[in-house]
Image 1 (cartoon, rainbow over the protein chains, first blue to last red):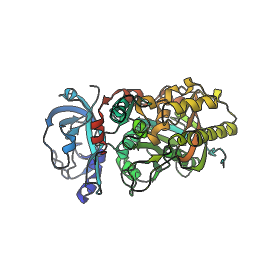
Image 2 (image 1 turned 135 degrees about the vertical axis):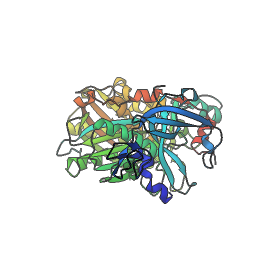
Image 3 (image 1 turned 180 degrees about the vertical axis):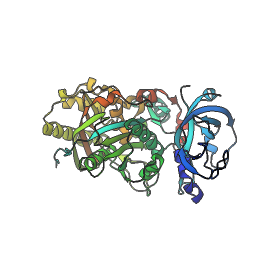
Image 4 (image 1 turned 60 degrees about the vertical axis):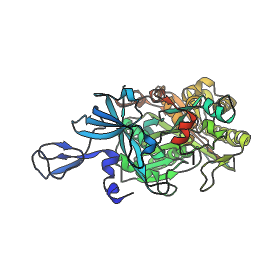
Length: 130
Length: 348
Protein backbone atom coordinates (compact mmCIF):
# COMPACT_ATOMS: atom_id res chain seq x y z
CA UNK A 1 0.00 0.00 0.00
CA UNK A 2 1.39 3.33 -0.91
CA UNK A 3 2.07 5.62 2.03
CA UNK A 4 -0.20 8.28 0.56
CA UNK A 5 -3.13 5.83 0.45
CA UNK A 6 -2.39 4.65 3.99
CA UNK A 7 -2.48 8.25 5.23
CA UNK A 8 -5.92 8.67 3.68
CA UNK A 9 -7.37 5.31 4.74
CA UNK A 10 -10.07 6.88 6.91
CA UNK A 11 -11.18 8.91 3.91
CA UNK A 12 -11.57 5.78 1.85
CA UNK A 13 -12.76 3.34 4.55
CA UNK A 14 -15.21 5.57 6.42
CA UNK A 15 -15.77 8.58 4.11
CA UNK A 16 -14.19 10.93 6.64
CA UNK A 17 -14.47 14.53 5.48
CA UNK A 18 -14.44 17.69 7.52
CA UNK A 19 -16.67 20.28 9.16
CA UNK A 20 -15.90 23.90 9.90
CA UNK A 21 -16.22 24.53 13.63
CA UNK A 22 -17.10 28.18 12.95
CA UNK A 23 -19.83 27.97 10.30
CA UNK A 24 -20.61 24.18 10.14
CA UNK A 25 -19.75 23.95 6.43
CA UNK A 26 -19.10 20.32 5.55
CA UNK A 27 -16.81 19.04 2.84
CA UNK A 28 -15.40 15.89 1.30
CA UNK A 29 -12.52 15.41 0.99
CA UNK A 30 -11.14 17.22 4.01
CA UNK A 31 -10.02 20.82 3.82
CA UNK A 32 -7.67 22.83 6.03
CA UNK A 33 -9.30 26.21 5.49
CA UNK A 34 -13.05 26.61 5.31
CA UNK A 35 -13.91 27.67 1.75
CA UNK A 36 -16.96 29.51 3.07
CA UNK A 37 -15.74 31.52 6.11
CA UNK A 38 -11.92 31.03 5.82
CA UNK A 39 -11.72 29.64 9.35
CA UNK A 40 -8.92 27.23 10.24
CA UNK A 41 -10.98 25.62 13.01
CA UNK A 42 -11.70 22.37 11.22
CA UNK A 43 -12.70 18.94 12.58
CA UNK A 44 -12.97 15.51 11.01
CA UNK A 45 -16.50 14.32 10.27
CA UNK A 46 -17.80 11.05 8.86
CA UNK A 47 -20.02 11.82 5.91
CA UNK A 48 -23.47 10.20 5.58
CA UNK A 49 -23.33 6.83 3.84
CA UNK A 50 -26.50 7.51 1.86
CA UNK A 51 -27.48 9.96 -0.86
CA UNK A 52 -28.88 10.37 -4.37
CA UNK A 53 -27.35 10.18 -7.84
CA UNK A 54 -27.21 13.58 -9.53
CA UNK A 55 -25.30 12.43 -12.62
CA UNK A 56 -23.64 9.28 -13.92
CA UNK A 57 -21.79 7.68 -16.79
CA UNK A 58 -21.06 4.19 -18.03
CA UNK A 59 -17.43 3.71 -19.06
CA UNK A 60 -16.19 1.07 -21.48
CA UNK A 61 -12.59 2.22 -21.12
CA UNK A 62 -10.56 1.62 -18.00
CA UNK A 63 -7.46 2.75 -16.22
CA UNK A 64 -4.79 0.03 -15.92
CA UNK A 65 -5.84 -2.50 -13.30
CA UNK A 66 -9.58 -2.09 -13.73
CA UNK A 67 -10.04 -4.02 -17.00
CA UNK A 68 -11.98 -6.84 -15.31
CA UNK A 69 -14.63 -4.42 -14.03
CA UNK A 70 -15.79 -3.08 -17.39
CA UNK A 71 -18.24 -1.70 -18.15
CA UNK A 72 -17.88 0.50 -15.07
CA UNK A 73 -20.60 2.80 -13.75
CA UNK A 74 -19.44 6.06 -12.16
CA UNK A 75 -21.83 8.32 -10.27
CA UNK A 76 -21.81 11.88 -9.00
CA UNK A 77 -23.68 11.60 -5.72
CA UNK A 78 -25.21 14.18 -3.43
CA UNK A 79 -24.91 12.80 0.08
CA UNK A 80 -27.71 13.39 2.60
CA UNK A 81 -25.79 16.38 4.04
CA UNK A 82 -25.56 18.04 0.61
CA UNK A 83 -21.90 17.21 0.00
CA UNK A 84 -21.07 15.85 -3.47
CA UNK A 85 -18.89 12.79 -3.97
CA UNK A 86 -17.79 10.80 -7.03
CA UNK A 87 -17.86 7.03 -6.74
CA UNK A 88 -17.97 3.78 -8.65
CA UNK A 89 -21.48 2.26 -8.61
CA UNK A 90 -21.62 -1.49 -8.00
CA UNK A 91 -24.23 -4.23 -7.59
CA UNK A 92 -26.62 -2.03 -9.55
CA UNK A 93 -28.29 -2.83 -12.84
CA UNK A 94 -27.73 -0.27 -15.59
CA UNK A 95 -31.48 0.39 -15.83
CA UNK A 96 -31.60 1.21 -12.09
CA UNK A 97 -28.83 3.81 -12.30
CA UNK A 98 -30.66 7.05 -12.87
CA UNK A 99 -30.81 10.60 -11.59
CA UNK A 100 -32.37 10.79 -8.10
CA UNK A 101 -31.89 7.08 -7.46
CA UNK A 102 -31.13 6.41 -3.78
CA UNK A 103 -27.67 5.01 -3.10
CA UNK A 104 -25.82 3.59 -0.13
CA UNK A 105 -22.08 3.26 0.52
CA UNK A 106 -20.52 -0.21 0.53
CA UNK A 107 -17.02 -1.33 1.52
CA UNK A 108 -15.16 -2.87 -1.41
CA UNK A 109 -11.78 -3.68 -2.85
CA UNK A 110 -10.55 -0.83 -5.02
CA UNK A 111 -7.42 -2.45 -6.43
CA UNK A 112 -4.31 -4.42 -5.49
CA UNK A 113 -0.60 -4.25 -6.23
CA UNK A 114 -0.59 -7.50 -8.21
CA UNK A 115 -0.93 -10.93 -6.59
CA UNK A 116 1.71 -10.38 -3.91
CA UNK A 117 1.29 -6.68 -3.19
CA UNK A 118 -1.09 -4.91 -0.89
CA UNK A 119 -4.83 -4.60 -1.30
CA UNK A 120 -6.56 -1.22 -1.44
CA UNK A 121 -10.00 -1.00 0.13
CA UNK A 122 -12.50 1.83 0.11
CA UNK A 123 -16.01 3.03 -0.49
CA UNK A 124 -18.19 2.46 -3.51
CA UNK A 125 -21.94 3.02 -3.75
CA UNK A 126 -24.89 0.89 -4.81
CA UNK A 127 -28.45 1.73 -5.78
CA UNK A 128 -31.03 0.86 -3.12
CA UNK A 129 -34.82 0.66 -3.33
CA UNK A 130 -34.63 0.46 -7.11
CA UNK B 1 -12.16 -35.83 25.43
CA UNK B 2 -15.18 -33.66 26.16
CA UNK B 3 -14.68 -30.39 27.99
CA UNK B 4 -17.39 -29.18 30.37
CA UNK B 5 -20.11 -26.81 29.28
CA UNK B 6 -18.95 -23.21 29.35
CA UNK B 7 -21.00 -20.67 31.28
CA UNK B 8 -19.82 -17.15 32.02
CA UNK B 9 -19.96 -16.03 35.66
CA UNK B 10 -21.85 -12.88 34.63
CA UNK B 11 -24.49 -12.79 31.89
CA UNK B 12 -23.43 -12.18 28.29
CA UNK B 13 -25.89 -11.01 25.66
CA UNK B 14 -26.07 -10.60 21.91
CA UNK B 15 -27.19 -7.01 21.33
CA UNK B 16 -26.73 -6.78 17.58
CA UNK B 17 -26.37 -9.06 14.59
CA UNK B 18 -25.89 -8.66 10.88
CA UNK B 19 -25.62 -10.89 7.85
CA UNK B 20 -24.16 -10.25 4.43
CA UNK B 21 -24.66 -12.34 1.31
CA UNK B 22 -23.17 -11.19 -2.00
CA UNK B 23 -25.64 -10.42 -4.77
CA UNK B 24 -24.38 -12.95 -7.32
CA UNK B 25 -25.68 -16.53 -7.58
CA UNK B 26 -24.26 -19.39 -9.59
CA UNK B 27 -26.81 -22.12 -10.44
CA UNK B 28 -25.21 -25.47 -9.63
CA UNK B 29 -26.76 -26.82 -12.85
CA UNK B 30 -24.17 -24.65 -14.62
CA UNK B 31 -21.34 -26.40 -12.75
CA UNK B 32 -22.83 -29.82 -13.47
CA UNK B 33 -23.31 -28.99 -17.14
CA UNK B 34 -19.59 -28.29 -17.50
CA UNK B 35 -18.23 -31.22 -15.51
CA UNK B 36 -20.90 -33.91 -15.84
CA UNK B 37 -22.92 -32.88 -18.87
CA UNK B 38 -26.18 -32.44 -16.94
CA UNK B 39 -27.79 -32.44 -13.51
CA UNK B 40 -27.10 -30.11 -10.60
CA UNK B 41 -25.53 -29.99 -7.17
CA UNK B 42 -27.30 -30.72 -3.87
CA UNK B 43 -28.09 -27.01 -3.53
CA UNK B 44 -29.87 -25.10 -6.29
CA UNK B 45 -27.59 -22.04 -6.29
CA UNK B 46 -24.59 -20.71 -4.40
CA UNK B 47 -23.64 -17.15 -3.50
CA UNK B 48 -20.53 -15.78 -5.20
CA UNK B 49 -18.45 -12.80 -4.11
CA UNK B 50 -18.03 -10.18 -6.82
CA UNK B 51 -14.63 -9.27 -8.22
CA UNK B 52 -14.25 -6.46 -5.67
CA UNK B 53 -15.49 -8.47 -2.68
CA UNK B 54 -13.48 -10.64 -0.32
CA UNK B 55 -13.55 -11.79 3.28
CA UNK B 56 -12.59 -8.32 4.52
CA UNK B 57 -15.27 -6.42 2.62
CA UNK B 58 -18.03 -8.85 3.64
CA UNK B 59 -16.83 -8.77 7.26
CA UNK B 60 -17.05 -4.97 7.29
CA UNK B 61 -20.56 -4.99 5.82
CA UNK B 62 -21.92 -7.50 8.34
CA UNK B 63 -20.12 -5.84 11.27
CA UNK B 64 -21.53 -2.43 10.36
CA UNK B 65 -25.04 -3.92 10.39
CA UNK B 66 -24.49 -5.62 13.75
CA UNK B 67 -22.96 -2.52 15.32
CA UNK B 68 -25.79 -0.34 14.03
CA UNK B 69 -28.37 -2.63 15.63
CA UNK B 70 -26.56 -2.78 18.96
CA UNK B 71 -25.98 0.97 19.23
CA UNK B 72 -22.80 0.23 21.21
CA UNK B 73 -19.43 1.90 20.68
CA UNK B 74 -17.24 0.46 23.46
CA UNK B 75 -15.93 -2.47 21.42
CA UNK B 76 -13.06 -4.26 23.17
CA UNK B 77 -12.54 -7.16 20.75
CA UNK B 78 -12.95 -7.81 17.03
CA UNK B 79 -12.36 -11.42 16.12
CA UNK B 80 -12.76 -12.57 12.52
CA UNK B 81 -13.29 -16.31 12.03
CA UNK B 82 -12.31 -17.33 8.51
CA UNK B 83 -10.28 -19.72 6.39
CA UNK B 84 -10.06 -17.34 3.42
CA UNK B 85 -7.99 -14.43 4.68
CA UNK B 86 -6.99 -12.13 1.81
CA UNK B 87 -3.52 -11.94 3.37
CA UNK B 88 -1.72 -15.05 4.63
CA UNK B 89 0.16 -12.73 6.98
CA UNK B 90 -1.63 -9.52 8.00
CA UNK B 91 -4.82 -9.58 10.02
CA UNK B 92 -8.22 -9.06 8.46
CA UNK B 93 -9.48 -7.89 11.85
CA UNK B 94 -7.37 -4.71 11.89
CA UNK B 95 -8.82 -3.63 8.54
CA UNK B 96 -12.32 -4.28 9.92
CA UNK B 97 -11.43 -2.27 13.04
CA UNK B 98 -10.17 0.65 10.95
CA UNK B 99 -13.32 0.59 8.80
CA UNK B 100 -15.46 0.66 11.95
CA UNK B 101 -13.40 3.42 13.52
CA UNK B 102 -12.58 1.20 16.50
CA UNK B 103 -8.97 1.27 17.74
CA UNK B 104 -8.78 0.58 21.49
CA UNK B 105 -9.55 -3.06 20.94
CA UNK B 106 -8.18 -6.56 20.71
CA UNK B 107 -8.14 -7.72 17.10
CA UNK B 108 -7.36 -11.18 15.77
CA UNK B 109 -8.20 -13.66 13.03
CA UNK B 110 -9.34 -17.13 14.05
CA UNK B 111 -9.12 -20.25 11.88
CA UNK B 112 -10.83 -23.59 12.41
CA UNK B 113 -12.26 -24.54 9.02
CA UNK B 114 -16.02 -23.87 9.16
CA UNK B 115 -16.32 -23.25 12.90
CA UNK B 116 -13.98 -20.28 13.37
CA UNK B 117 -16.95 -17.89 13.73
CA UNK B 118 -18.54 -19.68 16.68
CA UNK B 119 -15.08 -20.03 18.22
CA UNK B 120 -14.81 -16.23 18.11
CA UNK B 121 -18.19 -16.03 19.86
CA UNK B 122 -16.99 -18.34 22.63
CA UNK B 123 -13.79 -16.38 23.25
CA UNK B 124 -15.62 -13.06 23.37
CA UNK B 125 -18.18 -14.60 25.73
CA UNK B 126 -15.26 -15.40 28.03
CA UNK B 127 -13.73 -11.92 27.78
CA UNK B 128 -17.06 -10.19 28.39
CA UNK B 129 -18.17 -12.63 31.07
CA UNK B 130 -14.92 -12.19 32.99
CA UNK B 131 -15.23 -8.40 32.90
CA UNK B 132 -12.06 -7.84 30.84
CA UNK B 133 -14.08 -6.08 28.13
CA UNK B 134 -17.66 -4.86 28.03
CA UNK B 135 -18.43 -5.66 24.37
CA UNK B 136 -16.92 -7.36 21.34
CA UNK B 137 -17.71 -8.33 17.77
CA UNK B 138 -17.46 -11.95 16.62
CA UNK B 139 -17.53 -12.65 12.89
CA UNK B 140 -17.82 -15.76 10.74
CA UNK B 141 -16.97 -15.02 7.12
CA UNK B 142 -15.59 -16.80 4.09
CA UNK B 143 -15.17 -16.73 0.36
CA UNK B 144 -15.13 -20.50 0.29
CA UNK B 145 -12.88 -22.32 -2.13
CA UNK B 146 -13.76 -25.41 -4.13
CA UNK B 147 -11.46 -26.97 -6.73
CA UNK B 148 -12.98 -26.83 -10.23
CA UNK B 149 -14.75 -30.14 -10.91
CA UNK B 150 -14.66 -31.22 -7.25
CA UNK B 151 -17.86 -31.92 -5.31
CA UNK B 152 -17.04 -28.94 -3.10
CA UNK B 153 -17.39 -26.59 -6.04
CA UNK B 154 -21.18 -27.03 -5.97
CA UNK B 155 -21.52 -25.82 -2.40
CA UNK B 156 -18.50 -23.60 -1.57
CA UNK B 157 -19.96 -20.08 -1.38
CA UNK B 158 -19.47 -16.62 0.12
CA UNK B 159 -21.16 -14.78 3.01
CA UNK B 160 -20.58 -13.18 6.40
CA UNK B 161 -22.29 -12.91 9.77
CA UNK B 162 -21.43 -10.71 12.74
CA UNK B 163 -22.62 -10.57 16.35
CA UNK B 164 -22.07 -7.91 19.01
CA UNK B 165 -21.67 -9.62 22.40
CA UNK B 166 -21.97 -7.47 25.51
CA UNK B 167 -22.58 -7.33 29.25
CA UNK B 168 -25.23 -4.64 28.62
CA UNK B 169 -28.68 -6.21 28.89
CA UNK B 170 -30.46 -3.05 27.73
CA UNK B 171 -30.89 -4.04 24.08
CA UNK B 172 -30.40 -7.77 24.43
CA UNK B 173 -31.51 -9.74 21.38
CA UNK B 174 -30.58 -12.98 23.13
CA UNK B 175 -28.84 -14.17 26.24
CA UNK B 176 -26.05 -16.72 25.85
CA UNK B 177 -27.06 -19.41 28.33
CA UNK B 178 -24.16 -21.81 27.81
CA UNK B 179 -21.91 -23.33 25.18
CA UNK B 180 -19.68 -26.33 24.70
CA UNK B 181 -16.99 -27.51 22.33
CA UNK B 182 -15.85 -30.94 21.22
CA UNK B 183 -12.73 -31.68 19.14
CA UNK B 184 -10.64 -34.60 17.84
CA UNK B 185 -7.81 -34.93 15.33
CA UNK B 186 -9.84 -35.99 12.31
CA UNK B 187 -8.52 -35.23 8.83
CA UNK B 188 -11.71 -34.99 6.83
CA UNK B 189 -10.89 -31.74 5.01
CA UNK B 190 -7.75 -29.61 4.86
CA UNK B 191 -5.75 -27.12 2.84
CA UNK B 192 -1.96 -27.08 2.99
CA UNK B 193 0.13 -23.91 2.97
CA UNK B 194 0.36 -22.25 -0.49
CA UNK B 195 -2.42 -24.44 -1.91
CA UNK B 196 -5.37 -22.60 -3.47
CA UNK B 197 -8.00 -25.27 -2.89
CA UNK B 198 -8.81 -27.63 -0.01
CA UNK B 199 -8.83 -31.42 -0.23
CA UNK B 200 -11.23 -33.78 1.48
CA UNK B 201 -11.91 -37.46 2.04
CA UNK B 202 -15.35 -37.54 0.37
CA UNK B 203 -17.73 -39.78 2.34
CA UNK B 204 -15.36 -39.75 5.32
CA UNK B 205 -16.50 -36.16 5.93
CA UNK B 206 -19.87 -37.54 7.07
CA UNK B 207 -19.94 -40.15 9.82
CA UNK B 208 -16.59 -39.80 11.63
CA UNK B 209 -16.37 -36.07 11.05
CA UNK B 210 -19.61 -34.06 10.82
CA UNK B 211 -22.02 -36.41 12.58
CA UNK B 212 -19.69 -37.56 15.35
CA UNK B 213 -18.61 -34.06 16.36
CA UNK B 214 -21.97 -32.33 15.98
CA UNK B 215 -23.78 -35.05 17.92
CA UNK B 216 -21.12 -35.07 20.65
CA UNK B 217 -21.21 -31.31 21.26
CA UNK B 218 -25.02 -31.14 21.21
CA UNK B 219 -25.44 -34.10 23.57
CA UNK B 220 -22.85 -32.63 25.93
CA UNK B 221 -24.61 -29.26 25.97
CA UNK B 222 -28.09 -30.69 26.51
CA UNK B 223 -26.86 -32.98 29.25
CA UNK B 224 -25.02 -30.25 31.14
CA UNK B 225 -27.82 -27.67 31.03
CA UNK B 226 -30.52 -30.30 31.50
CA UNK B 227 -32.55 -29.46 28.40
CA UNK B 228 -34.05 -31.59 25.66
CA UNK B 229 -34.66 -30.86 21.94
CA UNK B 230 -38.30 -29.99 22.55
CA UNK B 231 -37.18 -27.15 24.87
CA UNK B 232 -35.84 -25.33 21.82
CA UNK B 233 -38.03 -23.42 19.41
CA UNK B 234 -35.32 -23.43 16.74
CA UNK B 235 -32.05 -25.19 15.98
CA UNK B 236 -29.28 -24.20 13.58
CA UNK B 237 -26.65 -26.70 12.45
CA UNK B 238 -23.65 -26.27 10.17
CA UNK B 239 -24.72 -26.82 6.58
CA UNK B 240 -22.08 -28.36 4.29
CA UNK B 241 -24.97 -29.51 2.09
CA UNK B 242 -28.77 -29.52 2.43
CA UNK B 243 -28.91 -33.14 3.71
CA UNK B 244 -26.52 -33.25 6.67
CA UNK B 245 -28.30 -30.70 8.92
CA UNK B 246 -31.65 -32.42 8.34
CA UNK B 247 -30.16 -35.84 9.11
CA UNK B 248 -28.31 -34.76 12.24
CA UNK B 249 -31.37 -32.89 13.51
CA UNK B 250 -33.44 -36.05 13.16
CA UNK B 251 -30.81 -38.20 14.90
CA UNK B 252 -30.67 -35.77 17.84
CA UNK B 253 -34.45 -35.52 18.17
CA UNK B 254 -35.04 -32.14 16.50
CA UNK B 255 -37.72 -31.69 13.86
CA UNK B 256 -37.34 -30.29 10.36
CA UNK B 257 -39.61 -27.41 11.42
CA UNK B 258 -37.12 -26.39 14.11
CA UNK B 259 -34.25 -26.04 11.64
CA UNK B 260 -36.20 -24.63 8.68
CA UNK B 261 -35.72 -20.87 9.35
CA UNK B 262 -31.95 -21.27 9.50
CA UNK B 263 -31.55 -23.71 6.61
CA UNK B 264 -29.89 -21.60 3.92
CA UNK B 265 -27.71 -24.12 2.08
CA UNK B 266 -30.27 -24.89 -0.65
CA UNK B 267 -30.16 -21.28 -1.87
CA UNK B 268 -26.72 -19.92 -0.95
CA UNK B 269 -24.54 -23.03 -0.48
CA UNK B 270 -21.93 -23.39 2.24
CA UNK B 271 -20.10 -20.18 3.17
CA UNK B 272 -17.86 -22.17 5.54
CA UNK B 273 -17.26 -20.08 8.71
CA UNK B 274 -20.42 -18.07 8.00
CA UNK B 275 -22.66 -21.12 7.52
CA UNK B 276 -24.18 -21.73 10.94
CA UNK B 277 -23.74 -18.06 12.09
CA UNK B 278 -25.73 -16.90 9.08
CA UNK B 279 -28.34 -19.55 9.87
CA UNK B 280 -28.60 -17.93 13.30
CA UNK B 281 -29.10 -14.50 11.71
CA UNK B 282 -31.92 -15.93 9.61
CA UNK B 283 -33.46 -17.57 12.67
CA UNK B 284 -33.19 -14.39 14.77
CA UNK B 285 -35.17 -12.63 12.02
CA UNK B 286 -38.24 -14.79 12.80
CA UNK B 287 -37.68 -15.40 16.53
CA UNK B 288 -39.71 -13.90 19.35
CA UNK B 289 -38.87 -13.16 23.00
CA UNK B 290 -38.79 -16.35 25.02
CA UNK B 291 -37.74 -18.58 22.11
CA UNK B 292 -34.72 -20.77 22.83
CA UNK B 293 -32.30 -21.43 19.94
CA UNK B 294 -29.64 -24.11 19.58
CA UNK B 295 -26.65 -23.07 17.46
CA UNK B 296 -24.18 -25.78 16.47
CA UNK B 297 -21.22 -25.33 14.18
CA UNK B 298 -18.83 -27.87 12.70
CA UNK B 299 -15.26 -27.32 11.60
CA UNK B 300 -13.19 -29.90 9.79
CA UNK B 301 -10.06 -31.05 11.46
CA UNK B 302 -12.35 -31.46 13.48
CA UNK B 303 -14.64 -29.91 16.07
CA UNK B 304 -18.09 -28.59 16.91
CA UNK B 305 -19.37 -25.77 19.13
CA UNK B 306 -22.91 -25.70 20.51
CA UNK B 307 -24.74 -22.78 22.11
CA UNK B 308 -28.02 -22.39 23.93
CA UNK B 309 -29.46 -18.92 23.31
CA UNK B 310 -32.55 -17.43 24.92
CA UNK B 311 -34.21 -14.72 22.82
CA UNK B 312 -35.05 -11.50 24.68
CA UNK B 313 -37.08 -8.34 24.09
CA UNK B 314 -34.38 -6.58 22.06
CA UNK B 315 -35.37 -8.81 19.14
CA UNK B 316 -38.47 -6.63 18.73
CA UNK B 317 -36.44 -3.49 17.99
CA UNK B 318 -33.83 -4.12 15.32
CA UNK B 319 -33.34 -0.42 14.59
CA UNK B 320 -34.35 1.73 11.61
CA UNK B 321 -31.48 0.64 9.36
CA UNK B 322 -31.93 -3.11 9.66
CA UNK B 323 -32.53 -5.11 6.48
CA UNK B 324 -33.84 -8.65 7.04
CA UNK B 325 -31.59 -11.38 5.69
CA UNK B 326 -34.38 -12.63 3.41
CA UNK B 327 -34.38 -9.27 1.61
CA UNK B 328 -30.61 -9.41 1.18
CA UNK B 329 -30.76 -12.96 -0.16
CA UNK B 330 -33.68 -12.22 -2.48
CA UNK B 331 -31.83 -9.29 -4.08
CA UNK B 332 -29.73 -11.49 -6.34
CA UNK B 333 -28.50 -11.91 -9.88
CA UNK B 334 -27.57 -15.16 -11.59
CA UNK B 335 -24.25 -15.52 -13.37
CA UNK B 336 -22.82 -18.28 -15.56
CA UNK B 337 -19.79 -20.48 -14.91
CA UNK B 338 -17.51 -18.44 -17.17
CA UNK B 339 -18.27 -15.27 -15.22
CA UNK B 340 -17.73 -17.16 -11.96
CA UNK B 341 -14.23 -18.25 -12.97
CA UNK B 342 -13.36 -14.68 -13.94
CA UNK B 343 -14.69 -13.17 -10.71
CA UNK B 344 -13.03 -15.65 -8.38
CA UNK B 345 -9.68 -15.71 -10.19
CA UNK B 346 -9.97 -19.44 -10.91
CA UNK B 347 -8.67 -19.17 -14.46
CA UNK B 348 -4.87 -18.88 -14.23
